[in-house]
Image (cartoon, rainbow, N blue to C red; front, side, top):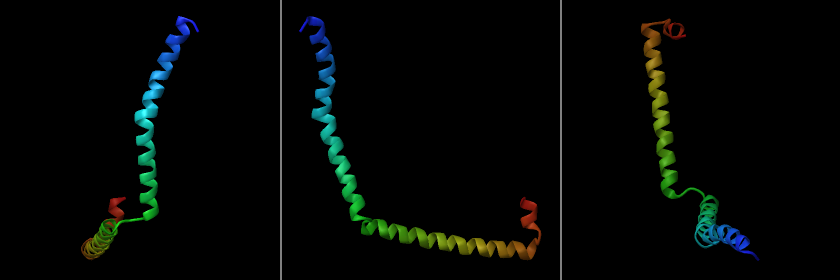
Length: 83
């Protein structure tokens, strides 16, 4: 091998070695950790948060219906005016 080939080889191999030593193991660990979390499903905390958000959405829906019925009673054409 000539001096040029050794230089090119070292330029290519140095980043590859750094990748294999540092990046690849972290990448594999994070990949399988995320797969495990997906397989396990939601935690109890996440499930409770979803229940709270669903309750808040239902409360908001009821408030909007109440506001719309008040607007219907006071201003019958408010829906047409919005368009």
